[in-house]
Length: 122
Image (cartoon, rainbow, N blue to C red; front, side, top):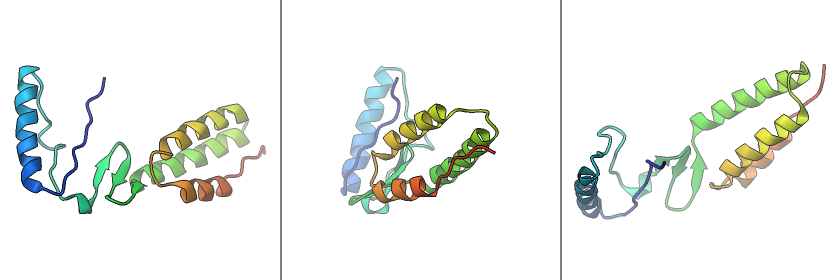
């Protein structure tokens, strides 16, 4: 089930026309575009999509996603220190999050986060 998609162009009129055609097609499927979540704006301003902010020259992780991740890593550190989780569970979580981050331009970010994480038992 996939319900997210993005269409990029520097031609605002093209995007309006494409949206109208997409809406007409979706009517045949008894579907419609969410009126608030669907937006048309210039490519140079970037677009939020699947946890990233997409620009013409780079893809960055959204700040809110980073805040949530940092909070989650603090929780994992505490849970590990208290013996509630194993190092294998932490590694699985790390691999999953890194796999998501690899869709963006995040090499340096991943290095910084990895360097700042310390897991130890109390």
